[in-house]
Length: 214
Image (cartoon, rainbow, N blue to C red):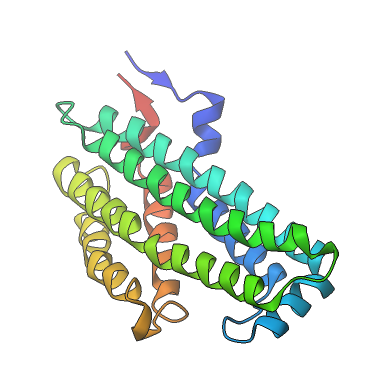
């Protein structure tokens, strides 16, 4: 006997795509103040305070949808697998860790925006800007774990094509490279991680295996 997904699950299954859209829109709206010139950073946050707050608010909603998607993947993997080996839980935990670190990025940026109602000391502005940039690099470590767990889970359960699993595994070293600050790869290779979320999300939506609960 099979049972259809709940309404929450039907919505959560699109969470990866929604996350990518909202994250890109949010960060584009917030803009980039740079990292080196404290006075320029302080001025940018003062002049664009509301816009920055809106942008990071949108990105935060996107992160929530990412966590919901990871929860949906966990449930889908449990339905597709013959045994409960914890891979679904591992995917969810790694995804939640990724979101937690990224919320740190947003919290630091929004802190700078909130205090920008008045003059902000350039050294403080520079410190906060570099702090949230550091968090954004650290974020690629749990993201690498997410892709690893997702790849292994897909290859084991074959919930979707094996190519999805291998693609996720290939993104593990990509994340580790992007996480090294001096390489400056976050603006280029970082975009591959967004693709690495959209692709399996589309593949999982098209798959018939996660759709029913036994």
